[in-house]
Amino acid sequence: MQVIVDLCVVPLGVGVSVSEYVAACQRVIEASGLGYRMHAYGTNIEGPWDAVMAVVKACHERVHAMGAPRITTTLKLGTRTDREQRMDDKVASVETRLRASAPGGSKT
Image (cartoon, rainbow, N blue to C red; front, side, top):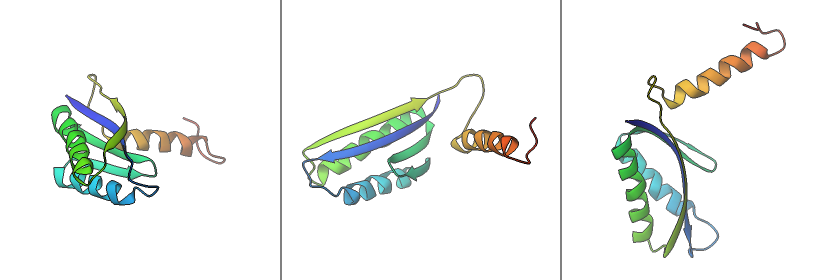
């Protein structure tokens, strides 16, 4: 089963800045070979369910190994069985609608 997740890993007890930990988690995600897109409050990851969940676990393991005593994670996920859909497809669908409803755009 394919899944798209929105992952936000927040280490606790490490001070105010967490960018070092976010960067370490991003390296784990990149090394996985899965599709991903970082944004201001997390990262979207897409791929087979087991591979994506393994990356979530690996991010936790890596951040703990860096000394974070606690981690809180927000994980949103979506699956579909009616057709294949990727992150870019979801964004393109909304962008198409935005263009169509823009002043001067065609409303189809």
